[in-house]
Each structure stands twice: as C-alpha cells, then as structure tokens.
Length: 441
Image 1 (tube, rainbow, N blue to C red):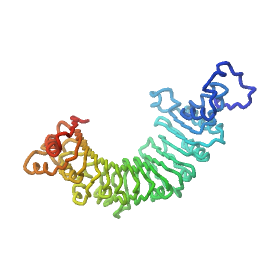
Image 2: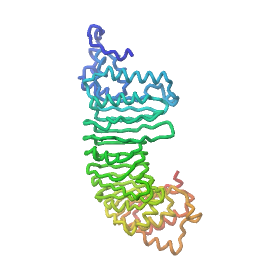
Image 3: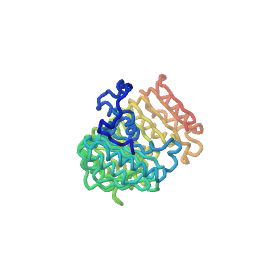
C-alpha cells in the first residue's frame, strides 16, 4: 500500500530534476490535471503518484471515480478464471484504503463500480462505496456487478438531494437473477436518468419513482419483473421496458395506464404475465418513435397503438401481437405521420393479411422493412401464400403510393416472398428501391 502514501512534508521529497522542471503537463493547474485523471480507472489513477512529486497527491482530489474490478486481473483470459480469495481480499483492501486516504473535502461527482462473474465481491464493500459516494454528494452513480449473493439496495440510495443519474444492475451467478426492491420513501428531486436491470419492482414502487423523481427524463427498465398500475409524468422523454414481465393484481383485470405526453422514444418489449391486462396510452398522441413487442400469457385486451396516432417511426415485432392487432384494425386510427415501419419476428405468411390492411392506415409511409426471420409455421404448412383468386384480391388492398424504399430479409425456404414482392411492386412506383437480404440468419 506504499503507493497510497500521501506526503505533505516537502523535506522528504527528492529535489526536482531538469526533466521535471520542463514537464509541461505537470505545469498545468490542479483542476486540469484532476480532469485528466478522471478519465482513468481508479487503480491507474493511484499509480500516477509515482510520476513525480507534482503528481504525488493529485489522485486524492479527483472527483470522478471509476472502479473496475477486472482491472486487477492481468489479461482477458485470466479474467475468466475465478478470482482467488486472496486477490479478492487485496482488491477490497484497495477500496478501503482508497476511500480512507482520499481528500474528504472533495465531493464525488461520479462513481462507477463494475465487476464480472469471476469475482466474488463482498456486498459490504459495495455498500461502503455507495454510502461514501452519497455522503460526498455524488451526482452520477453506476453499479454494475455480478455477485454470489445479491446485495440489498441501501434505502439511502433513494433519498438524495444531489443524485442526477442512477444505474443499478446487480446480477447473481445463481439461478435467481432478480431482487425485490421495496423502498419506504423515494426522494430524488433532481434525478434525470434512471436505469434498473434484473430487478423485481414490487408493490407501488414504479409509482413511487415517478412521484419521487419530479424531473425524471429517462427511465430504463431492463429484464425486470414489474408490478404495474399507472405511470403519469410530464417530464419523461424516454420510457423503456426492455425484456420485462408485466404483472397485475391476481384474478383481477388490470389496466396499465401510461400518461407521458412528452415522451420522444418508447420501447415496450414485454411479456404480459397477467390475464386480461389492458395497456392504455393516454395523452401521448405526439410520441414520434416506438418499438412494440408484446407477448401474452393467456389473453390481453389491449388497444396499444390507438393511443399513439402521431408515430413517425414504428417497429412492430411478435407475431401474437400482430394477430391481435389484425382483429383491432377497424378501430385503429390513421397514422398520417408514419414514415418508417419495420415488422419483424414473424412468419409473413401469417402476417400477410395484417400487413395488407395495416398499410392502408399508413397513407404517407416512405420506408418499409420486413424482417422476415422465421420459417413457415404450422398454420401455413409447406404451402405459404399462393396466387389464387382470394389472395389476388389482397394485392389491390396494398396502399403504398409514397414508398421510397422496401427492405426485405427472408429465408430461402419461404415460399410467400415472391407473391409478397409482386403485391408490393404492383402498388408502388417504379422508382421504389427494393433491398433484398436472402438467407437471413
């Protein structure tokens, strides 16, 4: 731990050499040098203390701390080998000494803690670092860890007058990857960015986040199990549910209402884990971009797109969701602003009727992408779509007057592609560019 020695007595420092006197970098003011050190990992930052007397104590005043545990392994191959108990203890001692010898009069602007599955890190070490940062008015906190046992989130993490950005991603190497989060109180008055990964948001936690974070602009929920009821926020600009499970009250129909009129980008990639759940968007007629991918447990009464009539860019995925939309098509609005549409994760033989009908709700569409990534399903057997009298009528239903580009990714075995291309070419101008990607993997 000799590298941590803070020397304040000039008499014990060696005299400056000519090289040091002409060192232009060291002649920069402390504020500039600490800004440079902020770009380094914590261990690298401490190691600069051996450069010269000018750098001896600069690391202790750096406001941005980036602790990457893998930094203590020699190379990528060794990182995959489980860390020894001695190495882990050495790292935790480093953290302890680092925080102990750091200049406590300097606030922490940001703290980032990262580990990998090869390291069995003590949860107490994590909590110690978090508490230290909060006591020193941290503005940006990012925790991305793999632990043998999931660490409890300190209650004080949700009460901070200074926190502007919070990322919490703690994954266990065991089977249970999520941890229930219950907070007695949430008060983060200036938090603008929140990302939670591998969490179980129980009770009314989601509502408490919205209420306790009045200026929250970006909310990312990734691989979370979320008990939903309502989200109402005028500050949100980005709302993401990515690979999440939505659950409601048991045996009771649930309406998940989202009212966030200023959202610019919406991602709803979810599995609806409750029967008869309805997802409703209110006051969101001006949302320009959305990614929708919904799967269901049993049934889902949902008019999702009806609340998003102002979309400009839309990604639709999941065949069950498209089948549900096909039933609801008569009630869908006309998407006058929609310029870009992408459909994926479906068998086009099944989604053909939906596509033909949905395009009539998009009169100004300019870019169409069909990510045709699945082989023919059982519903269509080995025949796909053939040009018979019934299907020929579908050609006339295609409405693509303003299309400029069509991108089609498909499998060679898919027999409906040629008929689909015929429909599109008959209903578009000759200037339309067709981009074909065969044998898509």
